[in-house]
Length: 221
View 1 (cartoon, one colour):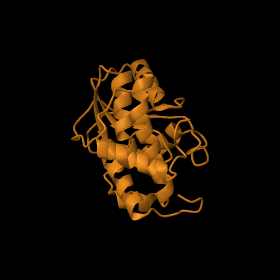
View 2 (view 1 turned 90 degrees about the vertical axis):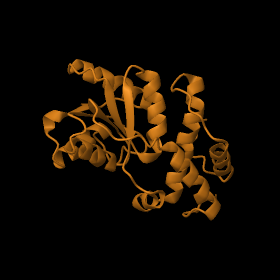
View 3 (view 1 turned 30 degrees about the horizontal axis):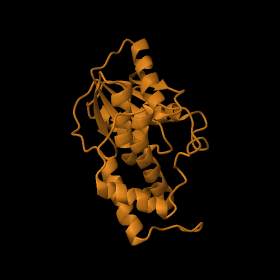
């Protein structure tokens, strides 16, 4: 990858698509006790989560997240605050939306949200965990580690890979994010942050190829 690359080559697209598909859990949507919307740079997570509430799949939502380098400029008051406001604008009652405004990583998203729910007198047996499409698997693996007692259903906006690239408008940025999340799925279990996930060899190969091509901006050092 050159410093000025803006579009993926055919091989890079195929490798990124393979990782994109792997990151999604393909869980069946069902009624859960609460939705947990993971904050990010992508406000569509808030809209998707609001839609799940309006469909009657959950009675309450918690949006979680402070700020990150990818979101601070867009959401200066924090991801959870902006996500909550957007959900209310879309028709979710204000008293159905809690926030957890301090988390700085996915483990904290889950742990701090559990505390917020406990303080509100809510002890869910099941959670509907919503995130960006390429973050589903890492979110699932993290939640299973941090909160093993709860049943987790993962969901994200149902977009095809090409449609997501078009919506974000930056193929290189998305691919860097895919690779970064892939590294975390592989490495975090060894660090005690997540439960282990089986990674097929073709996904491993795609991951290694994209790193070789220079998609490294989101890698842990």
